[in-house]
Image (cartoon, rainbow over all chains, first blue to last red; front, side):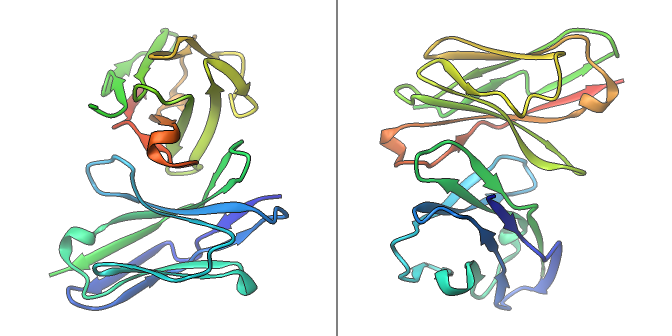
Length: 114
Length: 115
């Protein structure tokens, strides 16, 4: 069965600190997608990144970076030099390749203090 | 495109009343999803459609919930009769080839409070 675990319920950091959000997933599929979504205090869910199971290259986008390791079934998200605007709930998700369903983790609430 | 449009943004109703939530997906998207978000249960998939056809409604809590997609540009989620435990934020999301395979674009959500 598919499952996404975000063990960190809430993290608090001070602005400019680096922070890593953990995501561990379970799936029997050999082909799948992994995602990160951001939910700021305003409530909408914003897509950040998609990674397919064949692409284990790490990705960097500005202050954001993602580390995908199939060997440990992890897809971790690092924010470098965090800013107050990064305060949000971040969700990791898994979807089946044939696009049936998404499985969301429980989310990690990130508080960035000035 | 204006994105996924949901209405109403906020709804307060009394127990036993009928509630209808509406969603307009992004034009051209062929998948539409309804999610419910609560503190206790997180994000739950209720139902999803492909080309206006319901594919999986196993997440619909009970017979009080129903969803329809009469055409490619409109979907409704109805709760009748509503109960306090239905209080949640309901999200509609859509996906299609233009957004990249499997990428969900969410609406702003409809916050439902049942008194």
